[in-house]
Length: 121
Image (cartoon, rainbow, N blue to C red; front, side):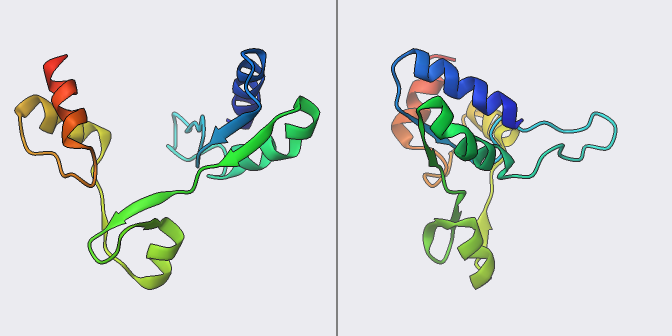
């Protein structure tokens, strides 16, 4: 959750970093009973930004990008507002496709990356 984001910031600062890239739902966790998120999608970003001056770090929030058929890569909010169709591929499905030798969509992974993953699997 958000405190884990702070821990990651401190570790990176100790290694000499001055900036911390933080994505949507960084270090998120879900309830084992209901499956609900404990924190909001941007809570870690907000918490890190609020504490960055004290840590002497700068946060760089990572936008939630998605791939659409209509416009390629856009932010998720933009795609939702425009009613664009979002392409999705779960990590589980990606690993299944990778093992089976199926074609991986180029919007999901570069062919060169897929080749390396398959060669080292």
